Image (tube, rainbow, N blue to C red):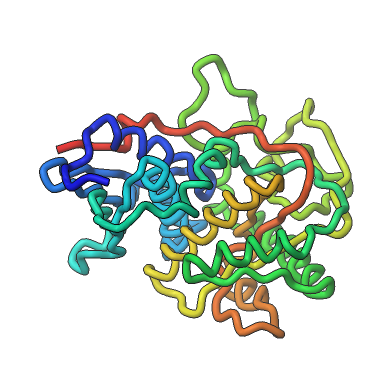
Length: 329
């Protein structure tokens, strides 16, 4: 621990871990500014990387930035730092999502620090998983990870899982009829393999996973009807392990907390040997989002649908260089 402002190199390292977080369509809607004189790192929404048709209220943007914030906290704890975080610190600047004072005087969070190795290994896997239940103790670890960030993780019963999968299919049908949403999917995904230079944002063809047999799978198909003749086909698990992540309330601060909870769950899952993918499709339509709630739980607002299990890891998606998202002043 130190009372001196953190040096620029350390901040660059922290931000490099932060931007490894998942984001909707891998749009990476974040910017950072480090005020070196006072040791404060600010997290801003990057509206040039927003999804106005898919995410008009910026709920997904806030969750993505919350996930980046959690990674930042993990990296800071692993560097023996104890950051103090203020969410939405300036009501007159809604794009300023968080201020992170890196020179806190409390002991570093040892539990978060243990998740540091998982940051680089966590990738969304859109491959079939084994039809295998997750042990109760592992599920409880994941639920505790969500609770630690002020959110709730719920594993619904078989009937409700079937209902959620129907909502995913309904959302796919609705999206196919929405030119704006289809255009955003095309804008941020690539059906051709990455070239030598690759992209720095969006989802490459290598990360799509196989096309499902029969068109039924608990994953989002980013091909969106575009031809990919060399893409393999596969059968997905019949009984997927689906979890709902939710919060009691549904405002920007709740979305930031949900994003932190989501990433903490994903890192805990990675550390426990699980692979995961997420789908926001049924949550992008108000009517479907309401129907995704489990009627037997007290969860107020579903923020994300997760698919967890055992199987092959996912292909990493590209990231914007740190120099593109970090200013040091």
